[in-house]
Image 1: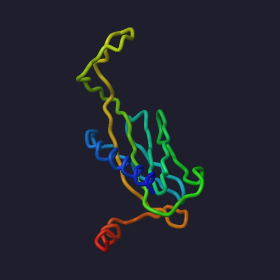
Image 2: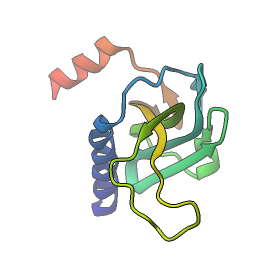
Image 3: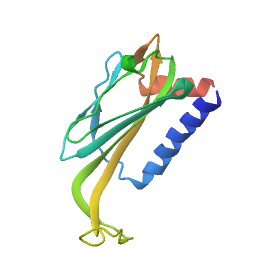
Image 4: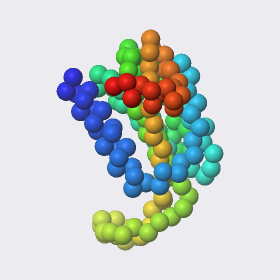
Length: 145
């Protein structure tokens, strides 16, 4: 229980810390019964999809150019419950590095880096299958708690 609580807390912390990212990654959810993926439009690269779920489940997938995909079946037994995802990508826009430290490599300190964007959300698994929740059902469930 402690591991799953720690994992969930870590994922939430990453979600809160992503407020430093521009939350403008426009990605359309392309969930199937057991796969988490997205349709990405725009000049994005170096995409990373991370999910966290019940009983300490953590999974991550990366792609240099397209949307990463995670298939829950390949992770073993899928537990019912609430899952959190975060998708992070780099744009083609360069931003200045404020703390340009010289790391000793040829070329001197880095003065710019690619801007990061992110999106995050949640989904639920029931009976080993991803269930799509409409926003009003989620609000009703929160009020009942």
